[in-house]
Image (cartoon, one colour):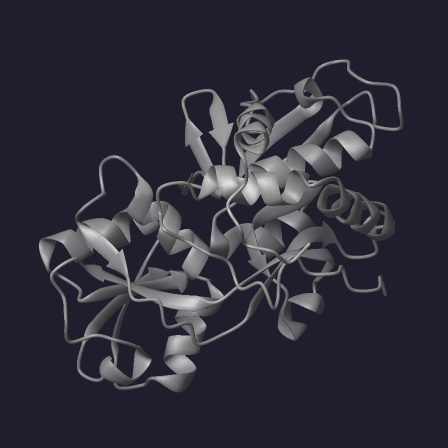
Amino acid sequence: MRSTKPLGLAAMAAAAALTLTACGGGGDGGDAGGSGDGVRIGIKYDQPGLGYRDGSEYTGFDVDVAKYVAGELGYTEDQIEWVEAPSANRENMLANDQVDMVFATYSITDERKQTVDFAGPYFVAGQDLLVRVDETSIQGPEDLEGKNLCSVTGSTSAQKVKDDHPGVGLFEQPGYADCLTALESGQVDAVTTDDIILAGLASTDANQGKFKVVGNTFSEEQYGVGLPKGSDQCQAINDAITKMVEEGAWEEAVTANTEGADYRYNAELNPPEPAPCA
């Protein structure tokens, strides 16, 4: 299950079938265990390859995992209401009953566990750097001294820069699209977040040939499913993630959503085994 060999044509066809789009809104749906009122799932809207909204279409690895898990919980895709969950708002959205769960590159941390619960992880990423394609002076975090760096407000990537690299000029923006604009214009020298997010950003049609991922990760980020504190859904979600891996749907989703980015996940860490529920 830890192989990173390319999938065959049949598997790629299955991956394409897996990456379906879903419209927001709750309808009357399946009867296998989901509520007739549907399920509200928080995702990112601005992360190509992870969580991305294009009109009424929602795509990305987080979206695919969320749809699989929702299906195992008894919800049809028509019962899923997709809700934008910016990094800085995820804890409040769960605490204030704005969403039922969050699949939004949501790193599991001890601090966050004080206010929300987590299922998973379903992926382990690593913080990396995105630079302009002609940049040669930045090979890793040790080259950031005196440089200007962009990350997203409320993210663990931004906090790590503050903690470990105080000599870096950090610009925090609401979303990664804002960071890419700043990078392309020369306002900042690099963008930092998790490697799989950067790969998705660099692989879009609009960005191909402009940017490159440095490829020198300096953290481990365990992506979990955010849940309201005291939720009783952790074990059912963990079981769904395990089944997704065992059936090969997890591998298909990763492959489909990073195609063209020359990206290989860390096979020593992925696919991860969900942690025991508290």
